[in-house]
Length: 103
Image (cartoon, rainbow, N blue to C red; front, side):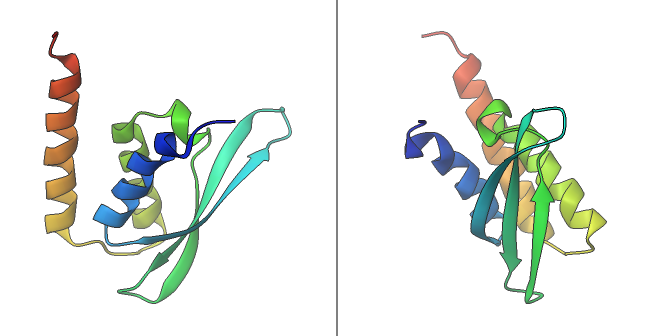
């Protein structure tokens, strides 16, 4: 079993987009691959929707997770403040640069 600390950054990405993560379903598809499906709530629109990640969250980088969320939001016509998207992109860039820097 994976520690909850692994999932915290993914939940923070969801919250940074001003969404609420209600549930995470881990399912196996017909080919036997594991994937996560998020159930999210948008307070701005009052809508609940599903996002199929196609893989477990921990198998995705934060940037890939972020882009899958954005694609799903566009597909379901749910708006997210552009400012929140820009801030999150900047934060992810800084985090990646920090991880790449040898110590």
